Each structure stands twice: as C-alpha cells, then as structure tokens.
Length: 298
Image (cartoon, rainbow, N blue to C red; front, top):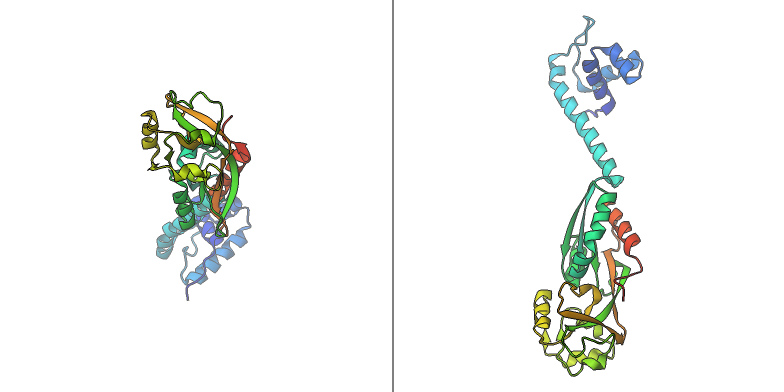
C-alpha cells in the first residue's frame, strides 16, 4: 500500500534545505522547531528511509533524500500551480468561453460587446463562431460551445433561452425601387414585386404576410449573394434590421408596419448543465448589456 504523503512535511523539508537548517526553517515557517522535526520524522517513517543524515549539526541529505528533493519540489510547485489556476478560474480571472452567434449579431453587436468584456475580464480567452440559427442551436446541444446567441428558436426542454433583444422586420430593396421612398409598408404593397426569400423569411409564417411566401419562387440563403441580387434589382426581400447591411449604399430598409413582426434574439445554453466560470461571466455580462434592448433605433 502506498504511503499517503501530506504536503506540509514536504514544504518543511524544502524549507530546511533552503534556509540551512531546522532552526532557521522553523522560524521561517512560524512553527516550533520540535514540530518541524516531528513532521520530518513522521515523513521519514512513512517513506521507510531517512531523508537527513544523523548528527553533525547540519541539515545534510542522505542519498535517498537527494533523490527525493527535486521530486518534492516538483510536487509542491505543481500543487501550488494547480491551486493558483483553479482560484483564478473560479474568480473569473482566467479561463475560456466558447460562444456562437448568428451572423448579424456576430458582425453588428459582438465587436463592441467583446471589447467591453475583455476590458472587464482580461484573463479570459474567447472563441466566437458564427452560423445560422439552427447551427447555433446544434453547437450548444452538442457541447461544441457553452453559449449561443440566436434567433428563430423553437422550445426544447434540453435548452434554456433568455430573450435579449427584439429586432424589427422590414423590407429591403434598391434605392430606385418604387417602394424605396416609403417610411413604412403594409405587406400588400409587396405583392406586385418579386420577393426573394431568405433564412429569416419564415418569420412571416403565421401572419397575414405569409401569403407572400407562397408566391415566391426565389430563395437565397447566403447574405452576400442575397445582397448582390438586391443591388442588381432582381427583387425585394424581408430582413431583420440587424441583418440589414447599412454599408451597402444602394439598398434601403423600410419597416414593415402591417403586420409588425420582429425576431427575438436570445442567449441559449443547455438547461441542466452548469456553465464554466468563464462562460458564467460572459452569460451575466450579455444579460446585463442586452436584455430587453431594441436592436436599433427605428
């Protein structure tokens, strides 16, 4: 049966060697010399070999003691390193958080949010991935990420969803389109025009505007391709305001007033699993920064 080695006697041995003797070590350790000597003797009994030569008045190691010294130092250093790392992670001073977000959030909101988070938690590493809402859900479910910021979420007992912000749906068209100068639109105003469906078009389902989807023959999921089609004047589309790329000067976003639709963007995590300290810090930070916020000014 292996002897159980306590850490304190190992520290005493190293203190004796580093300070030059039992008396100096006891003073350094704030212990009595008999207590230090007794702890070393107990350690020697557990190991079955003496660590220090007897007599001579000096703390001289036996051959066995010389073999033990570097290993004692390695063990103590490893213990201290693990303790420091564990405390730093528990206190959210170190760690790593993996998070996924839908592209519109990743590109429009996350840069400023992550800058603020890194300022508040400079020791935490962050991995951010983007993907469509189903992919974000999948990554959270599979444990590939601890947190997801997503939309179009369907209830699932294995997931917890905290609503963060509301994102209004509008119509996007080229600046010379007949609809471009309107301040707000009724869904029927879109009926004469080619509607390009995209991944967020399902937000029209269940509303009067769902009729538009049944007559649409063009679907584009990639935002770059969708933008190119809109700039070419092929048709119009519906998008959440966050997903509208304002840098495209030829495109216009007109709020859809009737019906007024919005997507909920929320924070997704596994329902019955604790977050790591780093992810918990991110979770609390995002809730504080975004909860109840309207995505952009109307």
